[in-house]
Amino acid sequence: MENFDQIEFDILNKIKNVIDRNSLDSVKTEIFGKKGVITELFKKIESLDQSQRKEYASKLNDLKTKITEILEKKFVDFGQSEINKKLKNEKIDITLPGRTYFAGKIHPVSQVIDEVTSIFAEIGFSVEEGPDVESEYYNFSALNTPENHPARDMQDTFYLERSKDLLLRTHTSPVQIRTMLKSKPPFKIIAPGRTYRCDSDQTHSPMFHQLEGLHIDKNINMGHLKGCLYYFVKKFFEVEKVKIRFRPSHFPFTEPSAEVDIGYKIQDGQIKIGEGDKWLEILGCGMVHPNVLKNVKVNSKQYQGYAFGVGIDRLAMLKYGINDLRDFFESDIRWLEFYGFDPLDVPTNYRGLSR
Image 1: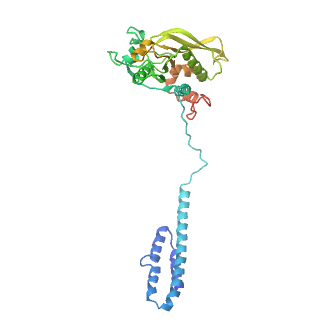
Image 2: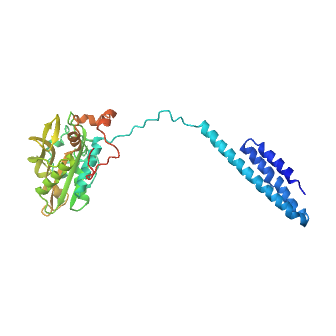
Image 3: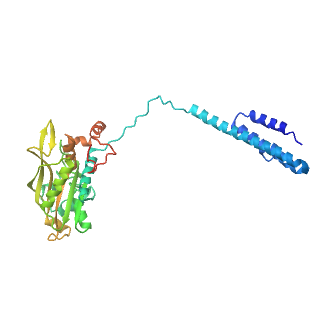
């Protein structure tokens, strides 16, 4: 019969002298491997007398269980020791100041586009887009612009070729033409986007942003146009009441045409929209000219509608007190920090368009 006490003592002594996990793996192999101490003891059971087997097997199983538990605890201790060592070596000094992350800001032009789009979406307008580089036909001819119209001159329009076939669009009205050519009435769209003209000063830029609207259907009249624009102005400037007047004007693509002014007054050095006896022009509009409908193969005797165009940059200047249009394109972070908007502050008509 084997001296299990001595065997246990020898094994525990080996385990006790282990200094790392790799050494412990080696000791475990010496004990439980194919030729390990415990494995060899189990092989001897077959050679014992029947009377000795039960006692031998019982003591051997007890020894195996005890050694296994000690090894498992030892592995856990080594694992925890390694974790503690890493934590000690890789610890973070939380007393140090953290890194500063600067949140970006939404540009006022992008904010106003979202605001205006949200307002018109409330009354059934959808958004359409088109290319910045347009043909002369879509930009002028299809919109009933005469060949001798000043807008066609090179001092007003950026032409890409001497033949004047290609140009940078001077308004987003070509989107209206493209939309009407590819679909059938009724139409109820807005077209925001970049536009280009040869002009640059405090209130004009060679590249600026414009939004145009179009509503074509049966029995549309000037009253619908007035109601639409009155709703828009109230919602955009976030006022309960607003004075609006329509001044007769002329545009090649609308007849009759009008300029829209809104009432304002100066209060505490600031413009207060909606009140007062002063007037401020904000957009142009009118009933779509029959020739435009004819060019897009829409029956002008059956369908009619209105169109309007407004400068996005100008709206931003009026609403948020920005004095110089050129500041929009200076890429000045300080300016954007002051006039910019929270990226998560998405404008809606329900919780307010602006801060």
